[in-house]
Length: 336
Ligand SMILES: [Zn+2]
Image 1 (tube, protein in one colour):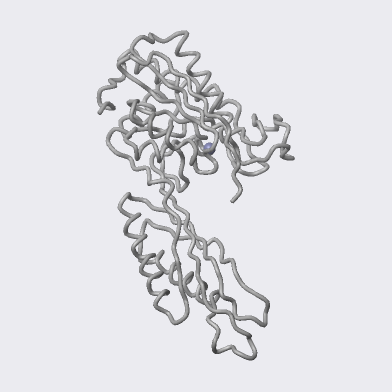
Image 2 (cartoon, rainbow, N blue to C red):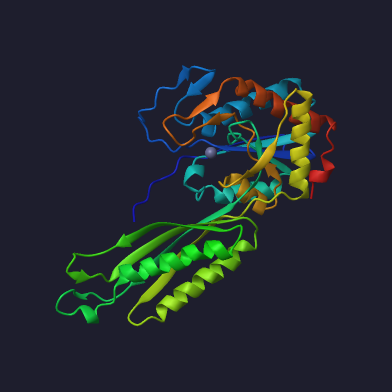
């Protein structure tokens, strides 16, 4: 096993005793390696800024800091405290910062996260959950010519398993199983004794996790009963689905109404991708996680943000903070 140390998380706290406490979170990591050829960041046609991570989520960092600066300068700040939590590992599943997120979820009333908005500016209202799994399939190797009947082909067993796993998509609405790899094999004159099937499972409702996992386990048990074949499942769900509960819906409505005040028509819809908002929501913190910039082509060399969205989103969040602090938006419904 190779261990790679993570960067440091950054936490800044202000007015921790104020009655309303807000968590502002975004990640500092991107999917791009140092020296990525899509550097340097540059302005391209159509009011766009292109570069690695500009939308996901460097633009969001700028929006968050500008909104806070405006709030601290011009808001009536006494009744609103906040923590900024910038984590270094979201793009690899926030394994290192999960405990920081879980602890923060307990201490705050609501969360504002600065992942990029959808390309048309829409907010994400709910997100699917996600988990990665592997199934190690073992058979028995044998000479393909001299002793074929004595072999138990692990690659073939894994392929049959993959078909049965894929078929679960049909019978489990709201769940998707993606078979992402089958690794294994041996020289052509050997019956292979090892294969690893890798899969990603996406869920819509919290109860999907146990239901689909028990179906997967049943297939693995079935495979274990085959002559000379054994199979072992590992992996887990890293993000529970983010559902639109009542408190989250109220926060969403408050943000949409701030948008209206600024002449922005904000729509919202679900997304298949998971974010740290999933983890915070599962730990009890209502949050909206797409308050960052408008942009597109994230995780590709063409990633860009619309420069006018930097100001637009900072104004939106600053106004939300000001209204919450002044009581123009009643914070009580968000509180537990
Ligand atoms: Zn992101």
